[in-house]
Length: 146
Image: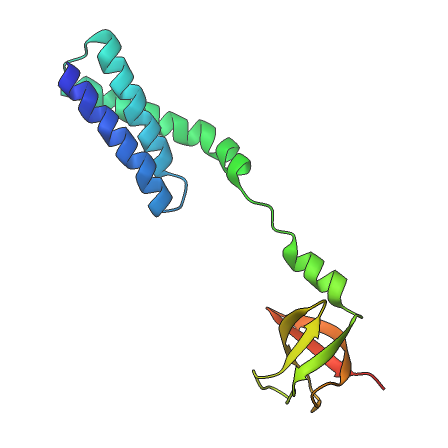
């Protein structure tokens, strides 16, 4: 009785840790199923492996179906950086710290004390003040100020 309860407990802990390594938020519920199976074996002295497997599968699948959507919403991060970067930087001025050549990855600008990779359809010399017109991934798109 106690041996199988301990085995299910260890399996549950292992599955919970495995969820940290392999994302997808599915293995977690099988870990919960194993822990609940361990608890039920301990409480009710269930010796049959067949009954233990049935409990494990039913509890795991019920947890997966009923709780996954709720838990996913709880643990999902909110990413707003993309919108903030686009909206806050467009129209602002920056200083070129590495000359910018069209379609070159070596151009850099400084804005608010932070260096950003920059690209432009124009050649722009170092120490020129530019306006940010857009963004592509982490590269700011700039144009010289007339």
